[in-house]
Image 1 (cartoon, rainbow, N blue to C red):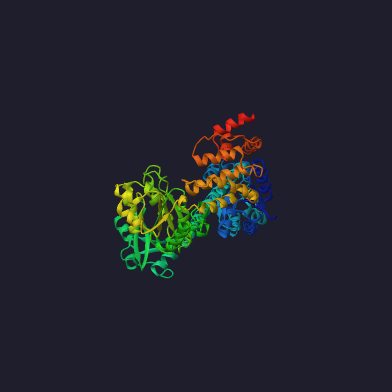
Image 2 (tube, rainbow, N blue to C red):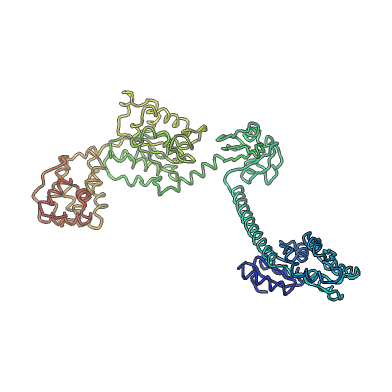
Length: 639
């Protein structure tokens, strides 16, 4: 035998059957291999084939019984049909005496009938083993039989004992029928095996979840006895191993929601319980089979572990911007007002109380908020920024507090975590706090007081450990006096206050900030262009910078773009002077000074960098589209 075999193997007791079956299999192109083995060797042959991958066997009925008895194998018997006897019935009719028909177990009724019609004196001798076969032959001879008809089991004894014998051969129809049956059985076995594998895989998955999930899992039967318990639940119940199995759940958890779910048949969802000193968040689900309540499965989450896991997840959200990027060392300037503000902010970092940062737009309130967080004991926690002015008033609650699945039309499947939960163990920066609607201020106040949130559409509260830093460019005290801001929320926010003065009150910081911005934007040409940039700043002395640091930064960026395309010393370029005058005068369109010849080169280079797109080129140069079009026309520059 080779190393590989077919999954279906036909074992033939005679060379005649082997050749006939082989021809049929070839014609059918059936996935069946043929092996010849005597009845004595059939079991050993089949055993070897099984070891090499055979799954279904085809054989004569005598061999079938042997294989099924000794190997517990799947065997398809080649059925005995009337057509099998067609070729020998004429010889049997001419035998001149009684004829012995040897068959495993019973002779079929149709053979008995045809023998009667042909007036053949037929006697049936049934056997169930090789020893029985020889006994049957001896009995037939003793009974005066002149001819024997049968298969391989009785052929040998008959010839040895001198009984004339006609070997019975299976017809093509019976062999084909057996082959088709074997192929169907193999298909069913494969399908069943696939189902079993899928079931096993599913069970393995469930077992992995059961054993290694962070949730505690307990199942009770209809009597309230513990039927399953995983390691996490064992730890929560302080029950090592399976010692809780079989015990009544009320003995383990006196106020168990599992028992309530078992008694009422209703799920007990999103509940907080105390189990052996551990606060857990639990869900208990009744299990019904055939309309009958058969028990309850409950999941438990240790609230402290859950919060710790959420914290680790939040820390990992760096790429989403949930970290503070700036430190106090990033706050540039040396004016007395700025130095005092930084000193106060540093003292606030170690505190737990809410901070209210006040200052005009563009003064760097978020920079201070990030620095306070980065210097605080919460520095490893998330830093979450919320611009209250950009959130629709209808979305404020769902964004800040989150929501459960189905809370409203369009809600995400599974719900959504709110920004307060996202900032757990860290800092939540509420920028533009003065813009939140009056009717929402009470809900925000409650969260700040209770330190717990309730998701929109949910029925349970979740504790949150969040420090709040708020910022505003409004005079909140005046807003309170005019009824546009709740006084109780104002006092809750204004525990620690920090005033960031505008740039016009810290003019000494302008050169320091401008130089830092120019170093960033000019990059490699910084040292070369720094003197020229100093001349630009001199022309801006006395300017009050109403947009504060943000305006200064934007101006320096525009200047650096123009200067890096200019020749050194060309600060009097028409574009630069136009930009400076517009900055000083606050005009949208200021008349251009006489242009130097190099200005056309600057325009052309900028157009090429921006793919000849007018809008992008104008933005880079810091001029309006109208001005750019006018200059292009002036120099005859074609797009």
